Image 1 (cartoon, helix red, strand yellow):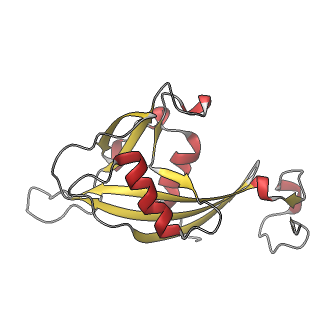
Image 2 (spheres, helix red, strand yellow):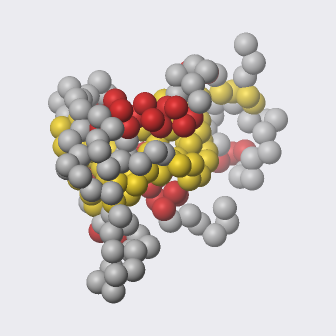
Length: 175
């Protein structure tokens, strides 16, 4: 089994800021597809709003990860072995949202990488919701709603999902 060593990486940050783990095993490498579902919104002038509201879904009491229960999340899932990222994004929409009418096909948005207690590779997609019936997520999620990006209930959003939202929708200038 091959592992990735931080000693061999081209990390821009000093080694002492990295976690003490020097190798990333398959158990510590998470590859996920996140789907930022945006609601088409128009400004009072009739122009499309540049910062459309995004969909967040709340994890219910039956969510398998207890620390996620009650938190708002972006629809997302780990890729299955050999699964293509766009196929995973479609799976997320079907399994978590039931692929409701008015929900477009996911489009690639950004690739992001986060190194902490484990290494997350996030393939972010966006899908557009053009209306229709309200989105009612499937179990283990209990509710879904669109939130203004400028007024997110940040304390209610799972920290790692908030990190993805911030990096995808508000990229820093050094990226």
